[in-house]
Image 1: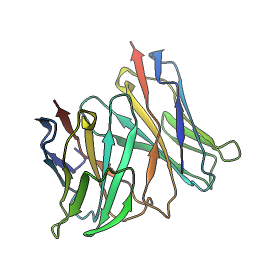
Image 2 (image 1 turned 120 degrees about the horizontal axis):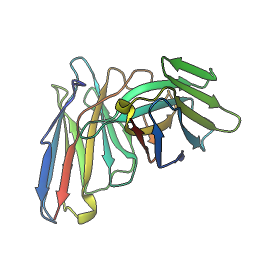
Image 3 (image 1 turned 180 degrees about the vertical axis):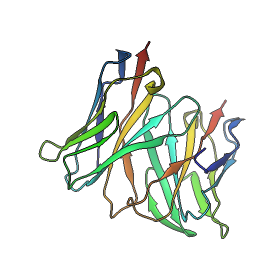
Image 4 (image 1 turned 135 degrees about the horizontal axis):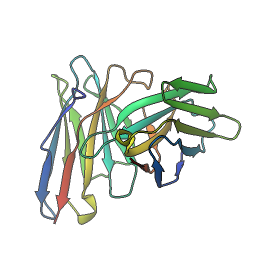
Length: 114
Length: 112
């Protein structure tokens, strides 16, 4: 158990809908990262937050947004969903905002868009 | 931006054999190279990492080598065991920034 909690584990929704994925980081970690893992693809970095502020952005679509709350949990919002958004979405957390501390990954949320 | 290529995509070995997975990166500014193991139904887990100021690092049966000139790094697993079966990802990044770029993964199957 990495200590990073993601909910829900599975999500099935229709095209055009909006969903929210939730991540609770490890106790004490201030940085949260979101990654997308599509079939036969590696992990694609989406966005990072550190202590409530956005720190880095990757290949995140405009239909997607995220935030980190004062209690440090984070939510990834996906809207106007398309079939191609079906993927595993991982959250990771680390103590610091750079790569000098290990990032621990949650078990992921499997999103299926039908 | 950074691009990481990983080979092979699948690797089958017999228990006790060695396994080698290779990655190349494109950005010469990258200085941090972690390897992750992802078991079925779980998130990736860091197994070993190397920084650009060293050429090799070992941790029991696992070793990573880095060739900065050629911009490639490799994961070596010796005396493989069935529990080593998983998908392995390499990644590259710069410690001054926050973004890791991952390879596409290698599915390792260790047969008893």
